[in-house]
Amino acid sequence: MIEARHLRVLRAVAGTGSFSAAARELGCTQPAVSQQMKALEQSAGTPLLIRTGREMRLTQAGEALVRHAAGILAGLTAAEEEVAAIAGLRAGRVRLVSFPSGSSTLVPTALAAMRAEHPGTRISLVEAEPPRSVEMLREGDCDVALAFRYGGASHSAAEWDDLVVRPLLTDRLVGLVPEGHRLAGAERVGMAELADEPWIAGCPRCRRHLVEVCEGVGFTPRIDFATDDYPAVVGLVGAGLGVAVLPELAVESVRAKGVSAVAVEPAVEREVVALTLPDLARVPAVAVTLAELERAAAR
Image 1: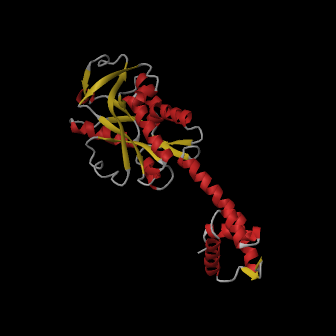
Image 2: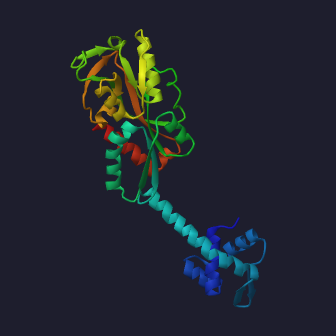
Image 3: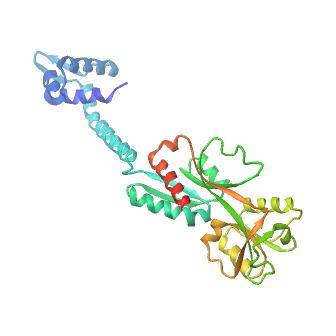
């Protein structure tokens, strides 16, 4: 295998015309230059230099290798500089995927801090709900996934065992009823009190969990409308078309016009986390992104 250090010596010998002059240029001894040239010729499998008295000239193979060495060494130097820039957060990128209410609450604060502190690091954002966001992480389509899972869900125990999990916050679900509803303004509402109401449900995972919670207190919700769009949920409730439960992050991210938010029992919570792969967690830009998301969640 041809090594970069041997190519540097070959270029010095070709440029200066002798081992001793090359040694002075490289800041080493003449025997060291001779030894490295022997090693390079062994790797190449052919002579690279012809020595005639004090004169030294390249063979055809030597000329070809010197010609390629310029590009190889230049590319290696550029690669070293780029890696150093990424390691020092002067460059690099982070691909982030988030669920919508996280995108409108946690993500802007975290990304603004990243841009202020590390302007050379580029961050992209796309939206996806779990489990799709987690699949994107495992498939290599993103570097950090903002995700959530509900407490007590049967599939939760081991679903992220292969990932680095950074807990961010516990997001409690709140009930939404129209402003003129009989329960508007109530301090606390039992889910069973909403058994006869038409329901507006959110994303598929939230919808599934809503059904589980309602069945746990003795009824199956009649879901008249289902939408992944939180403003649409609020709008439908505000128009008197049903009731809903939404995470506090989602309520915080929309203008809750025409609705009344009430605490529900039993308490329903979801764990909001940032996820990445173990190898990615050691990448400086990814590590800083995780830290900034954690700080945003603590505010």
